[in-house]
Amino acid sequence: LNLVVHQGQLQFVHDYVAWGPGCPFSCTPGKWYWVKLLKTADEMKGKAWLDGDPEPDAWMVAWRQYDLTLAGYPALVGCSGNAAAGHSTVSFSECRVAVIGAVASECYAKRPTWHETMLASAEAIARREGPRVPAPAGESDNPRHVRLWKLLHRDFADRQSRREMAREREDRIWARDWTPGDYGELAGRYAGATRAGMSDRARDLAKKVKTSQDLDAVRGLYHRSRDIDETLARWNDANLRSLRMAVDDLTRTCGAQYPRGAEFLRRIAAIEEQIALARGSGAKATDVERLYEAVKQFDSLRAEALLANPRLDFDRLLVVKRKDARDLKRPRVRGEAGNFVGNDVVGFLNGLPINFQGNGYLREIPFDNEIGVLSLARGTAENSRLATLYRPEKPVFVGDLKLHFDADRLLFSSVGSHGRWQIFEIGIDGKNLRQVTRGDEDDVDNYDACYLPDGRILYASSSCY
Image (cartoon, rainbow, N blue to C red; front, side, top):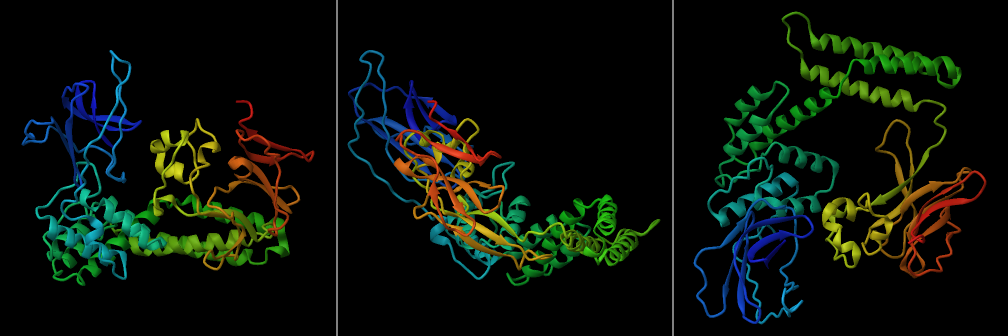
């Protein structure tokens, strides 16, 4: 995000994405000017003036509708053009950076859970920043909390915390500041967002909230309502019929190798009856909590019955384990790749180039990743184990896995000789690592290979350029 003097304008610009607001401002080569930028939680303001003139009292240009998730550092950049001379020199004489007001990291107060941390930190920000700041229309976040959410994602990476954070951001629970200590206001937001016919019960609980501990009851009901709502939204009665047909087929075709077929069919019939009873009849309303429990039982039974298929005679999967780039410090990307990283930061930094790019654009990006073998525990994902097959010595990309027809070795792409992309092969026991491509050229990338039935290897290469 830049504040620039451009074609007679003082204007904001998001590099390679969009121009922001601007105002008329002309400058003359050979003269000195002051440029001033103020960045707050939800707005940027700018002004400029000729050296020797008084600083304008008012800000000349302001920008609110930019990407609030972007982060970076104060910096100077200069490039210029002059219609008469063809070019001119850009010089900087003085630069000052001052931190004004509270920032989320200064108010961050980590507690045992993400919710307690958010509550304590958001209150600290509200006390220091003063008046409330509503979130812009259509946005789920309070601009003051953008950095706070990043810290929470860093410190609370477990699945449950991430799911709860996503829900509460979606329902705008934290989108507005509140009077510190007024937990009833927060309780009212939870009650207003409660689903699955539980809103009246949530409102009754919200009326009793006086302390932060009192929030737990209404917040717990809110998340249970979200569980129920999400589970029932994906339910289809055809699931019962599909599972029954699958169990019938496995029982008929596998015989003694699928000994629990009759048991599974009885359990399907029992769940079908529970669903019918939960829905009621006539004027009787649906018992959503009973229906929810029946659907959960079905989900568990489906996994158990289908994973008992004797044809699933493998118990290991090849995977790439890669740390989410959103949890890492954003790297400085140089070279040609630096011109495009802003188009899709999350995808790019997670090893997914834009559709007109190749893997070559990812050479300079650090990755925390490895090739792993996931040993499956039948019927339960919790007991599965992940072991490292190969981890690169340097923080470079590993991916594009292709298993050989004999399942005794695999190909993958990574950075090899000359710092370029190369094709590698390794045994499934983690031994016999070798670079397959010669890699003699210092300006050619080779990647995304696969085995052919005749023993040759097919791969992509930039050698044609």
